[in-house]
Amino acid sequence: MILEIKNLVKRYGDMLAVDNLSLELREGQILGLLGPNGAGKTTTINCILGLISFDGGEIKIFGKRLNENEMEIKRNIGVVPQDVALYGEMTAYENVDFFARLYGLKGRELKSYIEETLNFVGLWEKRKEKVKKFSGGMKRRLNIACGIVHRPKFIIMDEPTVGIDPQSRNHILESIKKLNKDGATIIYTSHYMEEVDMLCDYISIMDKGRIIAKGTSEELKSLISTDTTLIIEISSISHTVIESIKQVNGVIDCFIDEGRLKIISKKSANNLSKIIDCLLSNDVQIISLTSEKPTLEGVFLTLTGRSLRD
Image 1: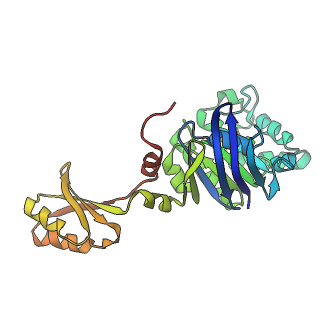
Image 2: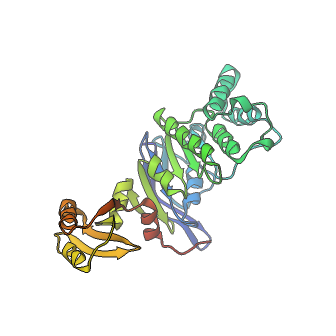
Image 3: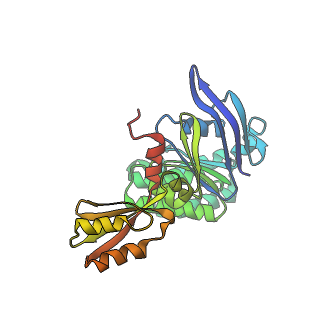
């Protein structure tokens, strides 16, 4: 087990920021940690990193208690913060060199790791340029390089793709997959649900300092939907045919929505062929047919609410 959190509690005065939170992360996993603003994600991450003290509970990393082995543990953790932490007047190489030395790298190993890491993020050719001239996407990639140059076993990435161009975003996502394939265990936070859906083996959703739901993407989606929705584009259809479809076993509802036929059925009904037979036998021309599936964003909004938070 890479990370074990048991009954973590953190207060700021009268405010309970983390409320008896328990969390596990197995070796080789990418864990998506989601939550609205103020859910307690940042506080939890800061506790894991030993940046702030906590009021109760226990954190173990690599099987060792954080408060008893903090320096040893930190040497094997990589951090990619949401706010870019770079020195604009220094070159890309100098930035990575600075952070590498903080982790104790030196000599041939230092030079080798810097070159390998800058190549990994696609910035070796830009190594002599000052960071202040870099685009937002290049800075994000360099930010990752500074956080992983020491080849950590455990990496925490806090919204690494926020506010960048599609090409840089794609490069970063592919890099994260490669890091994981090469053995890194990762906590990944993002407000881009499609990223989490694509990358993460397991997802935990936080709200008000607690884990309110956890599981694989498909397990979480099943929490909010026991039905399937078919969307059928048709030439025309009569009220009689709609009523006939409603009589098909497992159909919950059938109606016209924005000129398309929507049919809601129980997941277990397995009635697609019967629905199509009903339409064709009544001379209804089917132009296209799609299945509307629940999304991770839908799960998130259902569980945490749709109102804005500061």
